[in-house]
Length: 217
Ligand SMILES: [Zn+2]
Image 1 (cartoon, protein in one colour):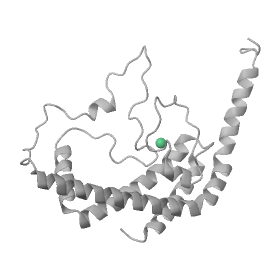
Image 2 (tube, protein in one colour):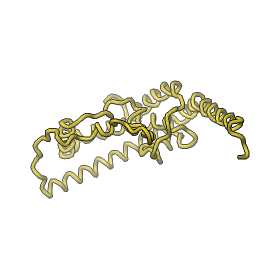
Image 3 (cartoon, protein in one colour):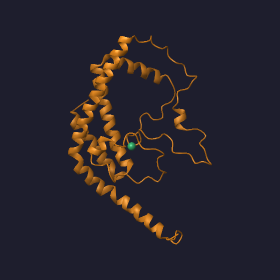
Image 4 (cartoon, protein in one colour):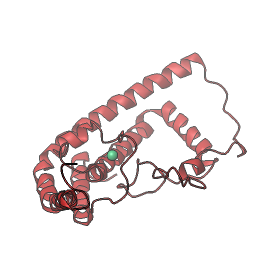
């Protein structure tokens, strides 16, 4: 991968800033649960986007940073953690042998979200992407590797700890770099996002004032 982590963060911020003017408030129904990537995310806090910013706008940045951190940790793992690399490779081979992966290759703005919007109670889906993503019981399963010895398990656990420590280190550097960009990110949100939010609030106000919804009821 080219360039320092900091310059890659900076390029991802540029990319998010280029995307921001195309953002529009969603007309779909709200999410059924909190987003695990964004809720309480130190990345979002470091970017200065934790309050009064629509989730889709936060999510598009958080996923860019997540991909960046994941790629950095993968690279570290491949170079320094041979046992963990082997386990990951075997796991990917098993995964590739099964089923359909509707969440693979999505744009960062859409990754990590529910695959299907909630179904209306009177109109259930014939099938959902989440169901299609389940491994098929009938799919041919590759031969399982021989079980690991206790020493091997301990060695893999030690490598997992090192990978976690590296991820925390990279995450900290990403946050520090994002902090340096928060001014231009906040400015762009004020320019491209807030007018839409204010317009929505004004619409809501008009709807509440309408004779179809009289006040004081
Ligand atoms: Zn999110």
